[in-house]
Image (tube, rainbow, N blue to C red):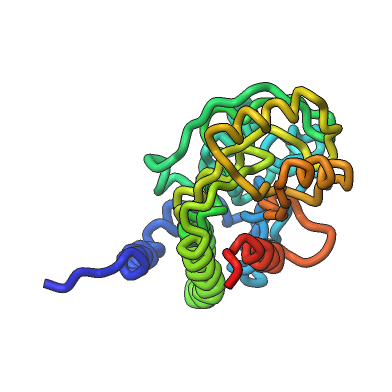
Length: 313
C-alpha cells in the first residue's frame, strides 16, 4: 500500500473536490446568474488582505475582487460603514477568514449562500488563548483572547484557504475551472516555497526562546516549532515602567534575546529593549494591504528578517 505525505494527500482531496464542481456550480448558480447574463464580473468581497491577495491570484477576468477595509485599521476589528455593508450585501461571493475574524459578520444580514468560510476545513485545529484588553495605535480597544485568527501565518493553512476560494470560483464559473486551477497551482507553488523556507528556519532556530510584541504568531509557532511567548505591545507605544516590569517577569522563565515586532518599533523602544539585551526583528502579519509590495513580497521579507535570528557560524 502506498502512503502519501501531507501535501500529496491535500492535492488528491482537492482534485476530487474540483471534479464535483460542476454539480456544486449548478446548486450555486443563483450566485452568478444575474451577473453572468448581464456579462458583468462576479463581485467578490474579501474580509482581509491575505484573502484578497489569494483571490486576486486565483481569479480570472470573470471576477472583480474588492477589499474595503480602511488603511491603518486592523481588519479583524473593522466595522463597515453603511455603504460598505451594502457592498457586502450585494456581493456574489463573500470570503471570510473564519476563526472568529470579522465579528461584525455575525450580526449583519448577509447572503448566506454567498459566504465562503476559508478556514472551515481546519476549524478543529484552531488555537484558543487568553488575552487582556489593550489599545491599538488606531485607537481601537480590544482583547486577543479567544480563538487566534491569524490563520495564514501557517502557510499550509494558507494553502487550504486558497483552495477554498478556488473551489467557489470554479463552482460559480465552471467554464473557467481549468484556468482557475492553473492560477491556484501557481499560488500554491509560492505558498509551498514559503512553507519549506519557514520549516528550514524553524529547524535552525530550534528551541531558541523568542518574544513577540503581540499574541498573533501562535499558528506560526506551532507549525514551525518556534518557542514564542507574547506580550501585548504596540510598536509605537511608550515603554512605561509597567511594560518593562511585564517584560522582566516574562524573562524570568523565558530568557529571550529577540523580540518579534509586527511593525517597525519606535527608536525609544529599540533603545529600551537593547538595555535589557534584546534585539528586535519585524514579522509583519500583513493583514491589511501594505503601502508597498504585496502579501507575497511582505512574507518573503519577513522570512529574510527571521534569518537574523539564526545562530552565527
